[in-house]
Amino acid sequence: MKKSIIIENVLKKIGNENLIDELTTKLSQSEISTLLLALSKKTANKNTPNDILGKYESNRFVKPSKLNPIKVKQVEILMLETAEASGFSSVLLSPASLLGSCSVIAKVDQNNVISATRGLEFISDGTNVLAIYLANGIKNKTIDNTKSPVHLSATCRVTRGQMFRSNEFVPHFGLFTIVSSGKDTGSYGFEKDAIAKHMEFYISYFGDKLGHKLKVSLNVRNGYTDKMGFINRIHFHLREIYPHIDFTVNEEVLDNSYYQGVNFKISVNDVEIVDGGFVDWTQKLLGNKKERLLTSGAGIDLQLFTGMLD
Image 1 (cartoon, rainbow, N blue to C red):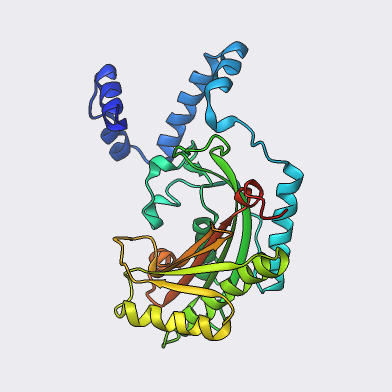
Image 2 (image 1 turned 90 degrees about the vertical axis):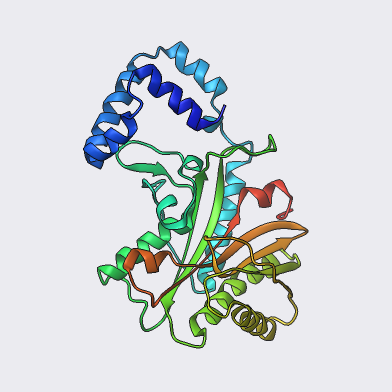
């Protein structure tokens, strides 16, 4: 049964099919949060210790990972230290983010995010949170990306709502993210330098530190007027700096509103481990078309599951 049909049935059971529209139009977010807190408290108080234990058995979101936590932390430290050596300053993120942090700026389905009370959601992607952190700093003039780009890194344990095919994976997993923020300098100057810097980190980590060979796919995306000219210049720039890396260009343009211009993917031992690209999030957050942002991320748990660190 589709979720929309389930919601329709719930609203019919309550006796008010317009309840959601009425609540979201007549109440402020703080009032909705107050209502949800009261509802959560009432629901929690109805449970017994036996109920909690029974629900733990069937709820996939609360089960621990099978991975060794010490090994996970070791990977996090190694990646953060390598990123710092490549010029990325680390940020210790909160496990919570604002409600809509992904769906509003990145057009991710809110149903794939775990929403909470108090206007919050579980963090589902560190890049979105870093984008908001950067935009807030730029707005309040505590971060300056005008003279030179700002490069940040973070690790976090994210939780996502979609189902995973393999029983090895739980809905929460370790994610390493890096972002580069700057201004449009013309002739794709920021874009070329930023993507080269991200490649520098991944080559240093997966290649130099772990001893693996990388394959990089550059995938064309809309968002730049001369999209083929843009990706060709990015490709040429990367090949010139890293001639020993296997770069390929995929010219198929997908209907994609997430990345702008180019989406790059890095495979290690035939495992796709890195996903990144340019996004317009800081442009939207600050209302400034001159803002530029490159984001990318690599799975932490996946490295352990696939034996990349052995």
